[in-house]
Length: 502
Image (tube, rainbow, N blue to C red):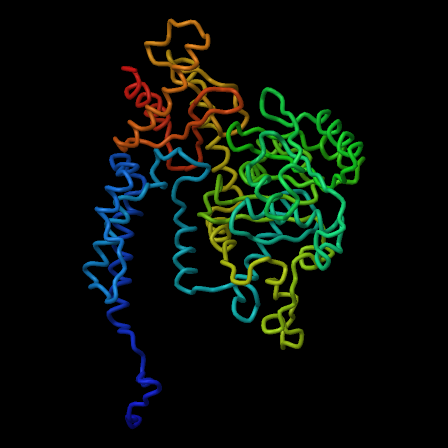
């Protein structure tokens, strides 16, 4: 039977009968946009003949892009042209010669998972609205906890390793002083925390954000390889106590951002046990070495940590963002610290097991199902496939190191222990100069100039930085399985080509 059409219902001048969107037109647009993504992004992801970037300065790019939003909508042809422009002028981070950051490449399984979650648009705070993705997160966290070496634990996926580090800092403070959740900072002693001089800058930001204060972050000196010196840590702890402050946290790093250094976790854990301090390990970058039986020794002692930050979106290519905080405690410390017991979400009289409503242990309300894309990749490749990904990246890094040693004009900063290859390119004009102040002053200008040339040419992208008294040097990072030995050779050839006239 065909239902009778009802007369239009008006409320405040708005017609309420039927949808106002043109579903057929919308479906057609999504279909055409997905085709464009496949043709211009996915199918070209491994094509070395494509540019890594189509560089334009900001003011010129503003002219090339139609950025203004208007009172009336635009045609689908115009929108597809905008999509084409966005792809054209965006950096191709999936290109085999994108080495600029601690993420790169394209994992097809993770990408499909991201398409799926974008279409479903879930938020994972309660089982009733996100049953599949909450179970997936639970399964992934459990497996990651096993790789750390804990028998049990807890965890949550967060929007970035910086947020995971902040969670851990706040959790350690809550464990030390539970009253802070309700009473706040008033009446607390001056708290101090300790971290490596090579730590990620998020430690300072977290201390500032949480009201601990950046002056109460004690940066422990590192050795020549960038590793925290345990004796210096203990010295600073005693000094802090003598000054009347209250140490509560040590943050070690497994895989520093620039040098790729791994702090000596066993020795640091011994110190934390002697002084009753929470040990957090920022393994955002280096945590993926746990997947490799050959390289997991880099994180020896991580099982003694109280919490760990680990980002599968880096070496394991789960797609930004995919970042987990893992906690050894199984007494619901995360929930006790962060829960607000919102009655409109976390009702205790639901018809299912409300222990699966895990959203109350997050500082967020809406939260993306980031574990799903990592789970999809893990299901597709298996643990052995992820291990091979790590092993191959580090083998390519080793190849590059040996090539740098052979080539005139290239000089290693140090022998790497992970995938961070730090080196200088010395142009012909400087090769006969004595390594004095003038030499280093001139060499400092080389990396930025080469970086400008490579980006304007679009041939590759490679990061550079000064670091702790060292003048600008390149930091090359191998991640993507699409990278070949030939790309390592091209990297050195291209730098020499771009810089030989300097």
